[in-house]
Amino acid sequence: MSAINIISSSSEEDDKKRKRKISNRESARRSRMKREQHMKDLNDQILYFGSKSGELARKIDEIGRRYAAAEAENRALRLHGEVLKKRLQLLEEMVDSYNRNSCINVEEDDDGDCFVRDVLNDFDVERPWLQPAFQSQAVDGIYQF
Image (cartoon, rainbow, N blue to C red; front, side, top):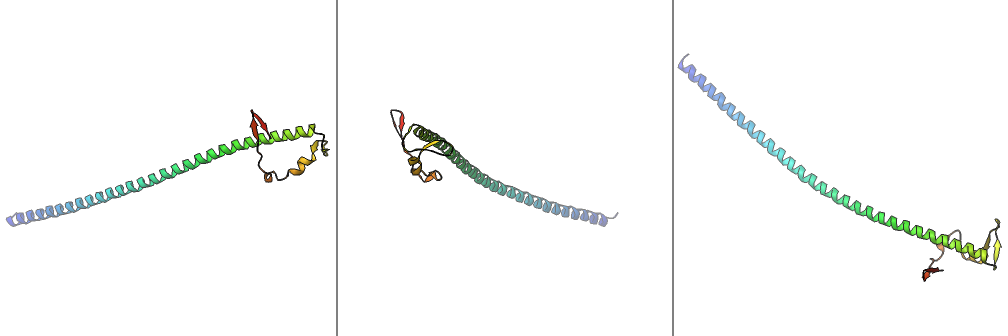
């Protein structure tokens, strides 16, 4: 081998090394840019899902408050319904007692039950909700109607 061949061969190897270094630097630069973009995307996702999480937590809290309010209202309505049932039962007992013990305007219906005609004329049996509200007062623990 001649000196020119060695120099030429050495120059080609240096050229190959230089091209490989440039290629490696470009590859490393692309890799860093890709990694930076990936990190940016991940940070954006963290912010997005963090805000969504907060929004969902607020909605859950609001639904919980509404549920608790509805539950309290249902309890109150059930209690009021029970009170009204007891009042109705008491009034029915009073009417029955009055019908059994009264001698004025007592009539019998088809079943043979006695009832007071005047009381029933004043009360719309088919539409009781149209009647004025019933008010009772307690004196010494005894309800007076």
